[in-house]
Amino acid sequence: MTHMPRFIPPSGDVAPAWAGELKAMMDAYQQAGGDPKVLELPQVATLVISANQVLVAHEIPGVHFEAESLPHGVRARIWVEPHTHLAQPVHLCFGLLPAEGIQEILADYEIGDHAQVRFLAHCSFPNAIKVEHRMQAHIRVGRQASLTYAEEHFHGPHGGTVVIPQAEVSVEEGGHFTTTFSLTRGRVGDLRLDYLVRVGAYGVAELVTKAYGKGEDTIHVREVVVLDGPGARGLTRTRIAVQDRAQSRVDTVTEGNAPGARGHMDCTEIVRGQAQASNNPLVIVRHDQAQVTHEAAIGTVNRKELETLMARGLSEDEAVDLIIRGMMR
Amino acid sequence: MQPYLLEIKDLCLAREGRVLLNNVNLALKSGEIHVLLGLNGSGKSTLAYTIMGCSGYTPDRGQILFEGRDITGLSLSERARLGITLAWQEPARFEGIPVGKYISLGMKEPDRQRVLEALEAVALPPAQYGYRAVDKTLSGGERKRIELAAVYAMRPRLAILDEPDSGIDALSLTDIERLIRRMADEGCTILLITHRDELAEIGDSASLMCLGSIAFVGNPEETRRFYREHCRLHPTPPEPLNLGFDSKGGQP
Image 1 (spheres, helix red, strand yellow):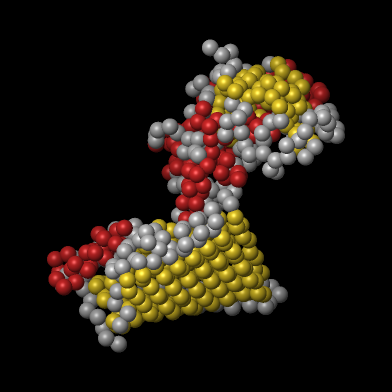
Image 2 (cartoon, each protein chain N blue to C red; image 1 turned 90 degrees about the vertical axis):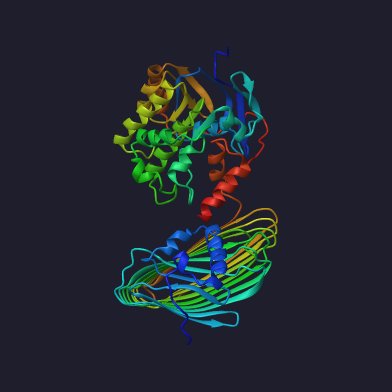
């Protein structure tokens, strides 16, 4: 593996050849809701990847990056030493600035035993007309470790982005994994999210996915939670809104395979205009002391919620918009 | 100047062959607290939804006048913009909408101080509640208090409070009564719906609803007495009336 240079990115020290690219990435990061100044803080671990270049890899004690450039992306290893407790989240910034191209991130995350970390990942494709972003992640959350991974996407207005986030996650005994995937600003394009999470004894996995499809966007979410260990807990919470002719399909699977395992799948999809949505929950229980439940609400906005807001003077459209925006927060 | 802020004339509503409102006549003076008493199922909430203009509550007959203007054909939003609002008996929950924002929704101009004041008025510490979401992490009682705070912050002309005392513990009830008084002092007319006659004390006038009709109108004490003597002794309503006018159906 080729190790990329690591440096702290105060503006004056950036290599001139990369400076323009980094500035453009930071602008895109800001558009996506991030604060570029945070990335300059020495106590914040930061990894910035534009197309197939690592622009910033700033390590801090306990957090390490290794990265290798590939023809269409980057292979990265991110590991957190055991017992590391971080007050500030690790910032990851991925993006592709041109209108066309492919970015593939192959990432291995290793969260050491008893470590407690948060990751904030911002993925920006502000000019995308024909862009494909593939993320293949392997994540290991060690014993009694805690990982919160929040991924926020910002896409441009054209809908020309294909996003394929795939993750295989292993949560070991007593580990805690929370992930939030959010694609609610700009056009979704074509989203194909596919997560598989295996949870060991007394481990917890919570997967939250939010997407707002418009125009001809297509959203396919597949989340599989396998509760293998005794007392393992799993929750999937999916919030999708589709309008115009957008389509969404949510396939959620939870397996309860051990005594005391508890799983729940909660899916809400709001459909407007000629859009279409479906949810296919699959419950598998292989132990008589395990329990898995699911709930789904698909269709129009709840009438009572709507009328409550209208009774405050909002128009129907304003009320619907507020409800969807709230759900996407 | 109109003597009444709200006038309801001969209001009838039937659904699926069942009469829900039967020639309801009621008038509220500007700035008064009017207590509408009645047993469960007597039609109080139906009347509230009909005044507010909720979907499925379009009257078959009759008129609703607000400051002398017929608002029977106006939409819910249009009525709200005239200054009419409703605090639901079981308020809805909203994912991702912070309490502070929810309370400010009906305000004409953003007023942070008014939001804080509204939260304090219902005994919810702003620092603890302002940024929480109005979702299922709140208890029913908390949600009801937030609903009342939102109505208070809106400064409505007419506030319909549907059973504001249900699901609220006894201690909070004092806060609720104080809030209602405060709203009235600010000039808000209040239609206070309840089945607990003790709450009638707060009213300037009162009426009693029974089987979809207004059975008694008077001062709060007289109305309470009538309610105790007649309704509470006969809590089971008889079969619904069939008055012969067509049901429009409507959403449940």
